[in-house]
Amino acid sequence: MLRRYTVILIALLMTSACAPEKNEQADAAPESTPMKFIKPELLGDVTLWLSKSGELYHENELKALSNTITADQAVELYAYLRDNGERWESEWRESFIALFPKSESKLPEIAEADRWQTEIFEVIDAGDLEGVKDFILETGILENTKFDPADTFKEGQSMGFTDKVEYIPFDFFPIQVENEDGDYPVSYAREKGKAEIADYLQSVIDELSQRYRDAFEAGRKSKG
Image 1 (cartoon, rainbow, N blue to C red):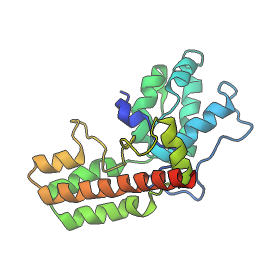
Image 2 (image 1 turned 45 degrees about the vertical axis):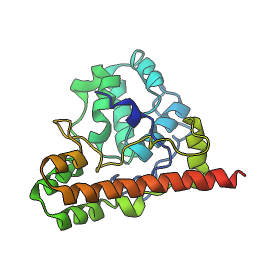
Image 3 (image 1 turned 135 degrees about the horizontal axis):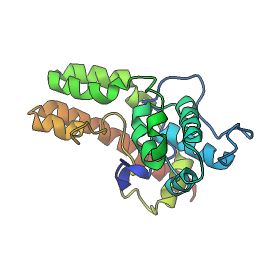
Image 4 (image 1 turned 180 degrees about the vertical axis):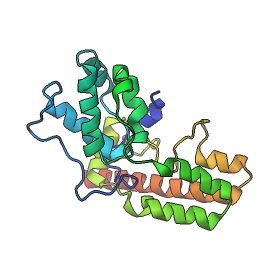
């Protein structure tokens, strides 16, 4: 099932703090690709956005592509995104299935268990604030999430921002990921009576959001 609208509009510039580590960051697709059924430009855009956000972009184009390719070709595309998108598969697998439903029965097993997506709820349940802080440190989200001012301003303009950022158009994985019951970590912690943990997680979200706003403002000022 596709995520809600506010999550689909993802900033291109979010550093992939939650992605499995690789030596090189995903970039546009190479000029030549064995997948002749998809345009290299589209493949490059989708791969890049996936690496930055954990979301599939160009929904309309991908839906149209789904109607013209076979299930095996969809699986080939999935494998390419898995190997080049630098994200946990569970971040985008359901969205891929929604776009390419005939591929579902043929998709490979998830190669890397996305433990962060479930572990964050486990550390909340444990009720140890220091354990939650250690978890956040392990993800590297505070250290690695950065935004380039010029590109952030350009991207913000494409979303209708002019003088300031009106909202943060993406979620920060894994601290804003929902569990199977549709709960999010901050609200989940509050419901469990763990206010300290909820406040800490919210402070992390606020800090990352401010980095995005600051980058947009710096980019806006540099444009004069």
